[in-house]
Amino acid sequence: MSVKTIDAGMLAQMFLAGAKNLESKQEIINELNVFPVPDGDTGTNMTATIMSAAQEVAAEPGASMEAVCKSISSGSLRGARGNSGVILSQLLRGFTKVVKKNDEIDIPILADAFEKAVETAYKAVMKPKEGTILTVARGASDKARELADAGETDLETFCKSVIAYAEEVLEETPEMLPVLKEAGVVDSGGKGLLEVLQGAYDGYLGKGIPFDTPAKGTEDGGEDDGPRLKFAYCVVLRAVLKQPLNRKQAGDIRAFLSSVGEDVRVTDDGEGIVVHIHTNDPGLVLQRALLYGELRKVHVHDIQTEGHIDPPAGSPVTAESLVADQPEETPVEKKPIGFVAVCAGDGMVEIFKSLGCDQVIEGGQTMNPSTDDILKAASRVNADTVFILPNNKNIILAADQAKKMCEDRELIVIPTKTVPQGIAALVNFIPDDAAAENEAMMRDAIAAVSSGEVTYAVRDTVIEGTKISQGDYMGIGDAGILHVGSDRVDVTVGMLEKMMQDGRELVSLYYGADVDEAEAEKLLSCVNERFPGVDVELQYGGQPVYAYIVSAE
Image (tube, rainbow, N blue to C red; front, side):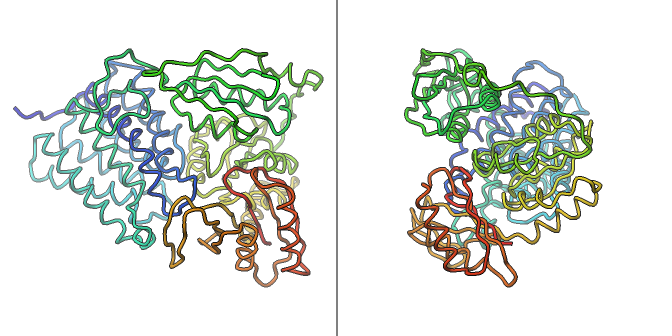
């Protein structure tokens, strides 16, 4: 006998299975990134987004349809990371708007919910682009409506048909976006959405990956007879610090670790700090640790199969033990306008603070902060109006979402796509001017900045006719690849040659965590020689992954 409706319990089961299937495929999705950079993160962002909601759903077994929908919507909205994560959260928001009104869901209701999901997601994007997750979502919605209008009543048939058509649309995305076709990949966000749908269908059939399965999962799911685990991995690492931690850094490390896991221990072994944590995302822990020092020992254990590692012995790292003579921070006087910026690297953090930024979220291309991260940072700024500087094109949507969700102050998002644009925005801020005047001035300022980044390729590919081999250095500008080569100083200079236009008077060079001072000085000398008459500034940024970040104004 065919099943014709879905109740709240089944919806929760399907959603959790969809989340787990996406989580198990996140690395495959990351590898679909068009640019062969070492920080492709679509799968990571979509997984973090849906898992934020899944944790809330799993925490309330037996909840009503309205409660399940609230957990899905609010959890994904606040946990949204990256453009793909924000779009996924908007799809879920639109879907639940329709579903929450019903105790049971049938195919006509599902078709309505799919349409509302697509409508909501398209509205959230200023310039929707076809060949993306939006196209795949619309394809699934169109098939759902077609089946509902044809009188289909069997949910198994419905689900199989919708997923099959969504997969067809996904395979067509390279024909819609030439850059996908040239790179030989389908759209990563669309692939992520397809994995959510497939996982949900598996959950409907009772064969999805159990939600308490360790995070790395298996490709085909499977049963897990062990006890349910809140966190799947035990991580122990030792980091040799670049410089002693101050009071704020020590507090920030503990706050961050506590937000992504439990059983957090941070100790001083005499040569560096040793971190112990139980978490579902070891990658985030490792990325954060790299901001403070060099990793010497890293152990990641699957708790389900390998057990956990005992916390390390040593003196606890506290603000008092590190900087006992540092004075307590005094309350900040309220001001009309404040700033929140996103950047990675201790040098970059200090630059933004020196320019008057109140709160810096340590993240960026390698660690997209969530909507909730931005909201929390803004709440710590004692100002009626807070400017948000995302400093990355993949964070702007999350910042816009935070703006819509913030209730206790006005957030203004300056759509800075690069760190140099964020610096330019702060430099051009005039405290005595009104917020609206400053917003217009900062938008003009960032439009006058050309930015470039230098990193290495993780695979062979061809982009816009340029052949790139694994290990090559790439100079990536505002509009794409500008220069490729085997020497990163030469690549940086070659990139700058294409960035420099008539009237450019200032070049700023920010060198990363893995660049020594001698190489940075060599680059400075080369740039001065190549562009006589142009002011050139060299500063330590300390950013991971990107050897150099460059701006021309």
